[in-house]
Image 1 (cartoon, rainbow, N blue to C red):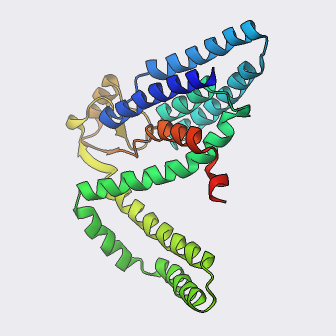
Image 2 (cartoon, rainbow, N blue to C red; image 1 turned 45 degrees about the vertical axis):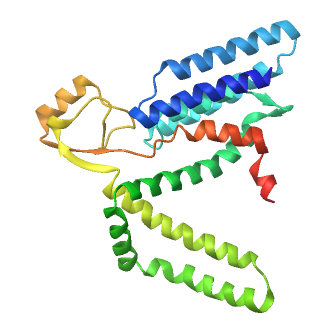
Image 3 (cartoon, rainbow, N blue to C red; image 1 turned 120 degrees about the vertical axis):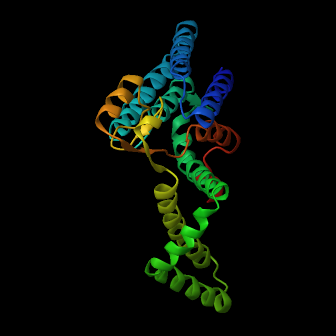
Length: 261
């Protein structure tokens, strides 16, 4: 039974991801159908087989994640679609292999989400060649942030050369890459994700700086045009595709932390 729900959860979240990539908006019907179908399925299963544990996990874990996601959305840390798709998967797939599915899913989500963000941001840089020139200038202007990572890298190279210890070398490389990507992310945020436009160019779905992370409506656009000539619109990583990717990884490999340990 869990396999069937996994398939539906993957197809629905993949459809949501495609909408997110194409339009930055996810139709409300997708998470609504996912939640409704998940709860209905496990309710019928509980009545049929007398096992209410999957239903209890579905309701408790799904509702908890939805509450946390909505809280993050209200604070402007996350998109509303992200919160709903995550909770929807929890409602649809409470258990897998006699384990609470979200325990492994959330652990993997941190890894897959980070890799997805790196690839997405790098892709944006390739599509906008000027980004990398700004990145080089930023490195020169903020060289102080790279002193410690480079020092550790050089020290680890000596350690590896004379003692053959490569764990320190791997950590030093990761440390340097994290600092570099932090500065690159700053460039993406300021040069790509934020844009000053005329209020007359606003359209439905744009996210205006200072608002919670949702697209503006026509009445809001009319109100803004009356008050401001220019506004700053913002965009973020179109993150919904990370959910079906994480789902696939979790089913295929289990918890990645245990795979790499």
